[in-house]
Image (cartoon, rainbow, N blue to C red; front, side, top):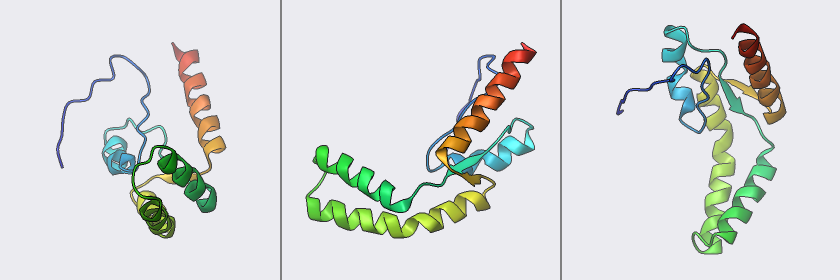
Length: 112
């Protein structure tokens, strides 16, 4: 795994998102900079439909390939979520994550 310097430039918080964000949870916790770690838990069917619509609109690959890939990702999603929670992220729905992050931001704005 590659490493590179990361500077918050004075910001009290940062958000890491994406499928690999859970990879840094343990190190952030060890360094005392972890305010929260979340893995989005979304309805799998809705995710499948959104992904397929996006990929079809962008004409990324042949429709048959996109459907096959989408079904494979749909089936793999529980394992991905288990891995992320195993790395220290908490599974939560998007609305809950947004509320928690807003709370973190509000807490930091009062301290400034």
